[in-house]
Image 1: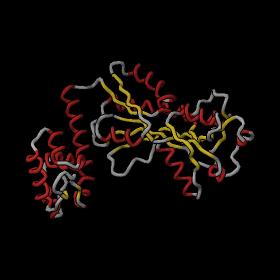
Image 2: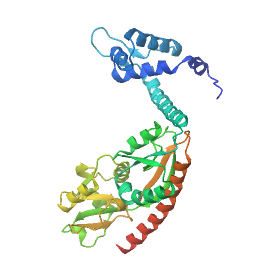
Image 3: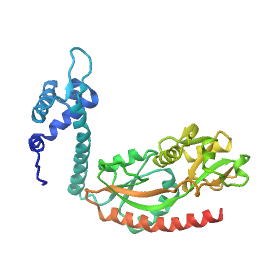
Image 4: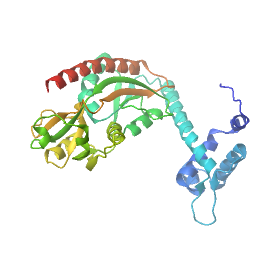
Length: 323
């Protein structure tokens, strides 16, 4: 156990998990009575837990008001809540690991993914994995939000997940890079840029209407990249489905900045413009909890994903050169 050197840190060793559970529930619900109902305690028991926490921390965590008004966090309470979220997530992960150990759960692998990885990489990967590990049952969690996927890994709800960097600071996640996915501008067949299929200058992306992803972390990175260069993307509509974005582009609602793996290349109602000269490729990788037990099946899945992603990376490069 790390040695605690500060006086405040040593004093906080008196905090117990029950204190943080009660505190987090009151902070989230902004109500002592609501927290008591959710946790199955009396309101006086919750009040006592919070009072003990405030005594140990020597700081008031809530502003309490007379009447029906909800409680509010103090500045000290906001600081503690940031750490409480992380600590409680770690405890959830511990519980998952202990349950798996007690049950001998060697037959389950929970994998998070997003649309383009699920469509282009995951089917072949799962087919090969099931051949090598026929007794492992794979459960998939799909989301368009990479923050949600990372959070599920941190909490122990997922064993590993496909995601995009950067991983949010402070998360105890390990990341391995798998492949590079170049960006294209998807436009209607009669769009002015469809003729030469070459973007004349980066500034063009700030002069045309765009349709864009709603939750995608990689898309947010692209928009930040453009703003850092003085361009304000003119996003007229957002969606999450790859086919829907291409449909919007085909109808001339706006051009879509999409990575290679997200594009349906057999569609004939759109044209693509290579953006490799202007926008860095997005990266796709796998994450898992740094401090959790990793099963042999999970380790094998990661190794197989690296091997298959390397092959797909080469195929993408070849197709881009011939597109």
